[in-house]
Image (cartoon, rainbow, N blue to C red; front, top):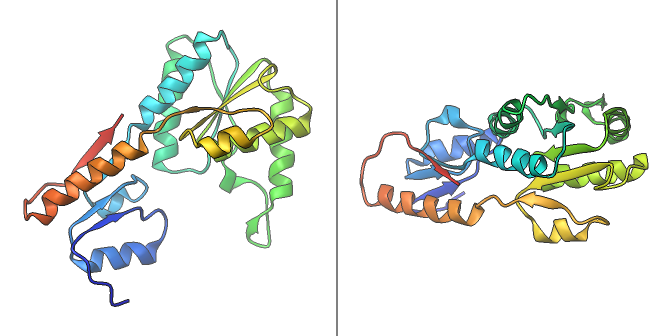
Length: 214
């Protein structure tokens, strides 16, 4: 309350209160996520289909023929990332299994029941054919896959090779097995967002813009 600014770079996510504040601010705004594309804000986003394609190519180059996609939730970013992964595999006539999204696992008392989530994840990883290439929506999802493999007694990467997204060095190197990850150009997105906001703050009228950062 009482904040006075000249422009906003936002990451609204699923916060309706934040979306309401930003829309009522009447300030130039650049959003850095496609999750709330319904708001019609100028947007800078990573090339999620390319991210999925790069992950598939990494696994294909290493001879994998069994694949699984591990989403975080059912939203546009997950859909784009998985589409790039699936389409690249489809060119080789290779199918891909899909794990349940994190927000669709068993619930207790209206909150996510993580014990149920882990049991389902372990069972699915044990059931799928090996060697298995598993692509997680981001490094956190991929880290959870590695931990579930450990619980299931599955060697990583011998039985299950795991890849995430974002190349979070602290997370990737702190696991008991180092995590491979697609480098998402978050720094480039920040520069692009700042440049677009500068144009808006200079009074240059723009149509709704979605700029992709590879």
